[in-house]
Image (cartoon, rainbow over all chains, first blue to last red; front, side, top):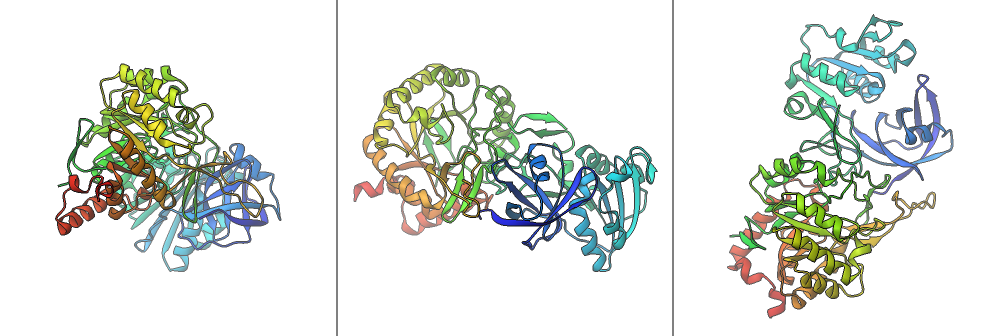
Length: 247
Length: 296
């Protein structure tokens, strides 16, 4: 598919560095699937859908900075949704979100909450004002918070909130080092992780986003802990040239 | 039933992974080899690491795919370990290489250890590389000669269809000592976003692959088979076993599959079992259908 023209209808400032861009087109998708967002003349970047008609973006580089200049009535191009999202399983689930990693997990929380699942969320950020979608997770179930500087919830990392309780399934998205720590703490076969890599084609063809032999854009972006345990996840990633670099 | 010798390499079938597809990690190349490919070809490797063009680098259009990746690659200097991982599948690994001059090509081929080299003198959208070289018969001959002098491994030359006469370029590769030619690379193409007027690809234009280019590729293979003594390897728009058979009948000794891998990671198994069933039903051998369209 060619990019679909999506006109921005609303921009919400979630935190000082994170904004949600709502557009006039809805995409039927599973939580965890992503779209390629084309900022014309600049770049095209992968983004998880945080609502059927929105992406939630942290300002980190050239493309996201350009997007932050956009407001109502500006338009972007969207391809997708692509990839495999989270598989909802069991009755009692745990969500672990770090920073903007809350974006793909929030629609999952809402969907699971509506379906009557018992949803517990561990929400982490650098500081209180960087916590994203706290209300959305709270409307779905219980929420525990951790901040690096102790301005809200536990003073420390979100991974320190993990208790020994048995959950049917654990869902995680955040910085890779944090996700690797989670994977080391939980039962791999009962956990799912949403990965971030340089994605070029988004179509499963070019191989730029591969984690070993796995295509993040097509086989992922969500993988089970069991699959990731046998891969370079948490150790290495490929940069935009394809060079192996430490996570 | 499908096994063959190709420029000295023993292949279990004539189906290879095309360059630029799932070719950046040893793990992805091995996965394709484990899924039935007769050989795998790496992403094109150059002298220095390069990030390629800005996104969008690939987009699906009505009749295929448009891409301008811009030769992103980690450099050959960082790639031997990936080739070694891919080779663990027990399937030949061919290194696709590119450069701006004969010295670049021979430097890479002199150092990398691969089962064969495919010279990318045909990428349609990288300034100073690829088709900028591959449209000039003298340059193609010189580069092929230089690589042949630098390595004992077989050397294949991948040709661009974006020329008036592909035969003259094929003959130049043959004069340079190429062991085979590969036809075709993508066809120059472009798409524009009508909502904004922007060309969609970050590079503005690129190359077309997929179903639309198959008849173009078939004609190139047909012509090269007639004109050359060395084998022709066919590539362009193959998505099922019938396409592969058609290429072989046109004169391809083997074929490469690219874009179609995206939607079917097991495509090599599917094509080989389809080809086997067809040959059995027709009571033909691979050798009998090779170049069949020329003989009847």
